[in-house]
Length: 380
Image 1 (cartoon, rainbow, N blue to C red):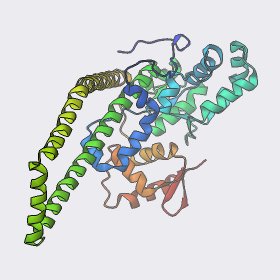
Image 2: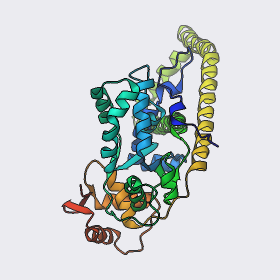
Image 3: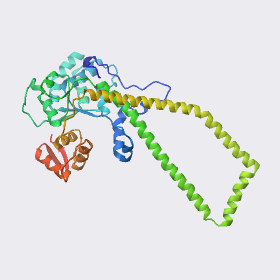
């Protein structure tokens, strides 16, 4: 289980290159590579079916106190300006996908002067860091504006409404949201999500690379076999006198003492070279396998730790799935792509024509706009 750690006491680590004489897979497959690896698998369905690995991706509504904690660390505790917090690295790796109601902008901008005073930073610098971080968030405007049930803090209503409309938990340290009945991620999962991203990047990167190499190797071997067979078939189609001449020439090369000695010399040299490199190659292979095994173990362990602190997933309707998909998309999404992603998320439509049904639902909701035929986006 994860330990509850106050955000101002969290020790975040920068992404630094590993200093070692041994080749490291985590230096080749960094956490930032994870989105590319996911995209690669999406583009190659056959390879995706061969790899039984699933990267954890957590979508949550982010509360203002989490964002304030990130800004205060950047401006008050970070020693290296290029260092990233566990939260930022997990976002960059796509393990954490954070969505915020538009009200978050108002709430954070109200506290920027206070953050500047407490960290000793210039207000301009605070504004710059806020601009950089908010670019990593996805903003959503809840359609509901009416309080429903207990309201412990009116400022928390936009977060509660966003959670309700997207069926997502709120990543927060605010007890008010929990009292208001919102599902919350109460434990700090920044560092664990970062560690999962790092381990999963190595595991997935090595698996994809080795599977791709084996696939190419098998195809090359098949091509070589076809080439030899073609060469043999071509030889058999030659006139008898030419077959006899070629066979005689090859026999003369093998029988002739100097030619035979040269062939033996080349063969012996190749054997000596193979025996010399076998030790280092085998040792390097064992080291790589140890790194892959450690990464697989870490990815499974962190996956379990994160799942243990997440609230139970809520069943989502078609329009909820569509909201989730469109809010994280930078451009309008084709209705066909929305249906495909919904299916990947586990949604099963009972409609005979899922695209037509979803198109009708989105138009009726009033929350979506069809910018071009069959291309939808959330209203600003």
